[in-house]
Image (cartoon, helix red, strand yellow):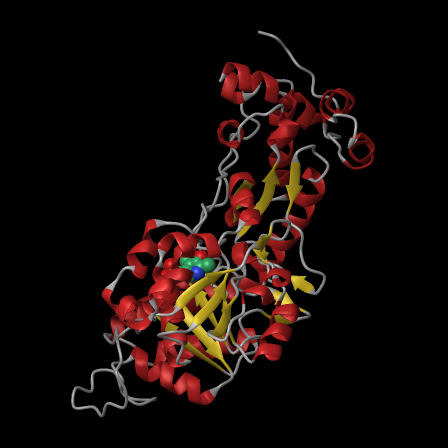
Length: 457
Ligand SMILES: Cc1ncc(COP(=O)(O)O)c(C=O)c1O
């Protein structure tokens, strides 16, 4: 079997393609002897040994000693529907974010739907949002019978691009729904300026961005309201759950009513003879989920710090590998949360090794990774919504032509982003600095052997 030695010098000479050589020489390093030893193997995808054989931190984290007492007490108490533990979690979550109020819901999707509905965003309204998001963002708009209008992204930050926003504003535009996708904050300074100028409501989809900050202010508390998800993979997990936060008492009272069958704010769960002040639904959380949330919340700050530190270090270790472009943060961002650690993969600088093969090779080295989202702005679900009876009753015919809709909502930067993005899950960022070295080394190894992997795998 052919042996390779992945020294810093050979790496630079074989991979730099001339342009990035100086940057690599000054910044990229394989200094650790242990690392060089491991790297002397062939790529794992071609039968060599993997850089990484140890497990990564598991998610979600559960510590029986600190976490179980309140959960068991709650279960033993026998009140499992919404009660004082849910209120306790809401108070803690609002306080942690610096928001006046919070409402715990069944999930982030219902937090978004409740928020849009209670802000009276609905039939005939256009809502500006990003195509680089999870489907629930768009579903929430459509389920309120409003029209999603896609604004293209800034691929370096992975976020909705405020520079492309104003051209999409019409007399029908009511709201902006920015998403702090991957846990990296969107450019809220610019977005709030645009909203103010055009008198638009801003709802932040912060479902992936627990404790991210802009100028020291937590995201989710900058717009009119913010929505969070506590689904299993999220940085604060209770299995399934969500929350709305806002400083607007009237809105929060209404959101409470809506999530509890339309009973007035403060109404008691289980009161069947209640008074009904609006049409509502039920998307209340449970006491035992809130108890889990309280346990998880206690470590969110420390975990967020750790992810930040590791993300910054990992970025510094991979940023000069040719063909790897890590995320960029907007200048006012004081903290990201890294629900995912993203970078762009430029295959031209990996001897045209496809992203799919790059991911397979990286996984073979023991690094968990994925390609992320596909474009959401031209899929059949939109045609289904546009052709629905309810949309036909609301919108003029020319607004419901699917081909025209797709044409009007083209987002070329996002199309390219979806082809080039690579994500690492947040849980790897809870590892050690040495773990980050493993990731960087694995990426560099795949880069070094890209041509061979392309030919042989
Ligand atoms: C950006 C975004 N918005 C909304 C949601 C919906 O949250 P949930 O899954 O809790 O309904 C998610 C969850 O994955 C999300 O990532």
